[in-house]
View (tube, helix red, strand yellow):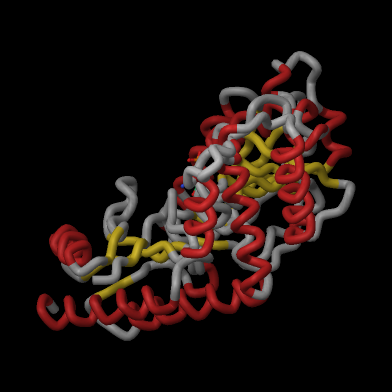
Length: 355
Ligand code: PMP
């Protein structure tokens, strides 16, 4: 029975990337070391690091005014590291459209002045927030491009006159996006860029002048903005996998092709939900996520039976996040249309039996 993985992250890899990863680690007849066993300062790893930075620049369309930082610690670390670096003596403003925005705010509060300028919590995050006034000493406006749990996505970045800081963890490289216009973009790799252990930060270099000299070197963006982000030992396999993911995106035809495919996949699932009285997704049409689709059966006591029966049918990772309950299908770049069609067929069958 073919299995399909709808996990929100760590998420599935394209088959071709899994093959490259396993070839890379396979013991070689002559005992040559794998990429995970060589110095990160040696020529073999340096070539990988260079191509990885270069391809990230090309795919995101950023120029020399941005630095590419490859860091550790995931997006959770950026929740604090970003305000420590760029909001030391200013106010970080937040738009809150779901769980991750709230977490980003809570961490920023530990290290900087913050102000919420819009939140859609009152509507249970079923719509994007209205934007209020920005503080006069605004360091940046932080928003979450795609809320992975609530299934909400900004189609375009908010239009404001202050620098934007975007948590793009769960939609990074899923479509063409104006990264050049965003002052700081960050994302963990474990959704669209391979495996956990690598965090990408794209930051406008002119903003690095704000970094306070009192920061520990490891947390100071400037330590990473040079020498190919090799400030300390990188998560070398995560870097290797990220590079393979970028090559894979190119082989697929680039971000336009990927975006069209992602829209098609999510369209199939949302249509199935909307056509039925049994299934529901409460998010406003204009901001429904293309990457993560939360959904509920009419009777919530059917959530666990659905999860168990779906798993038995080879459909994995459909249980919703514990913060929200229900079900969730994650449709990152590697997910196939065939998997989504199989899921929809399974949902129809489930509805026939329990509806
Ligand atoms: N922000 C968003 C939008 C996420 O989806 C996630 C992970 N699901 C995080 C932040 C946290 O990421 P990490 O586990 O890499 O710290």
